[in-house]
Amino acid sequence: MAGFPQLRLRRLRRTERLRALVRENRVDAGDLVYPIFVVEGKGIKQEISSMPSIFRFSPDQLDAEIEEVAGLKIPAVLLFGIPEQKDELGSSAYAPEGVVQQAVRRIKKSAPQLLVITDVCLCEYTSHGHCGVVVGDQIDNDQTLPLLAKTALSHAEAGADIVAPSDMMDGRVKAIRESLDKDGFQQIPILSYAAKYASAFYGPFREAAESAPQFGDRRSYQMDPPNIREALREIEQDINEGADIVMVKPALAYLDVIRQARNAFNCPLAAYNVSGEYAMVKAAVKQGLMEERRAVMEILTAIKRAGADIIISYHAKDVARWLQSA
Ligand code: PBG
Image 1 (cartoon, helix red, strand yellow):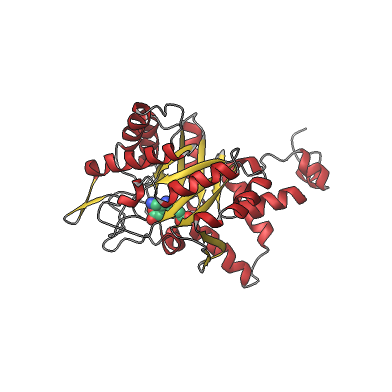
Image 2 (tube, protein in one colour):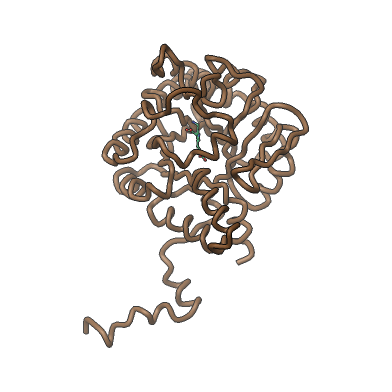
């Protein structure tokens, strides 16, 4: 007996009970990371126009948001900082009283169980908006490494649970690992944005974080979208340098990269459902083109099906809420 009419694949789709019994992939609130933008100052809670329902918070305004995230059983937040002062070397990124450092302390006080992951990069802090030190018209790799290491260390000192370098300089995982270990932070994991592509889908983020490059673009450090073998080399290199978790970013246009990374490596794999992916869904829903809940669940489930263990998403609070009510 091999085929129709004995074989009928529709048998297992007949009711929701049956479908649930044979379901291969599920999104769980425990897989999610919620990104939060923190802006220097006081009394600020400001919606980002390109990302409906996503706000910039000053550290003193974070408590309610954090309580909500923790209450939804989302295990972690990922912090991005928008400083008051920007300069050539991004010095607000590694200032002990920098905005991320303040936010980390505040969150660890109000919700000690919530994991705080910090984005380690210079682009929000540099006057030129690049992720590294600019020399002439180039982004200098090796001069950037100590600044990233200093930033990661200051986040750890403030109480960050995980540091997440997103700059795409060569050797930054090694530099960060060495600096954390030297100062007694051997237990702090590194989540590396290992295969991060130069993507149009970061557009809304750059408005949110005020981090658009003032000249040129990021293509000399972020990856060229057509490449997948190179992504595997980037990931392998970061694992060899000591990354504990690796990330593919963006997610939707790179599901094949997520799948191949899952097959090739055994370390935990994260995928970033980025700002442009979020904004597209929100815009389509606003126009009545699709149902938000179904579209978002389909996208996040696809990212899991591709092989991601962890999903960083601006939809995380909505998803956790829907899962609770399901
Ligand atoms: C910083 C950084 C970016 C994102 C995360 N970290 C922007 C960029 O590289 O230009 C994008 C996140 C998103 O679009 O949601 N380097």
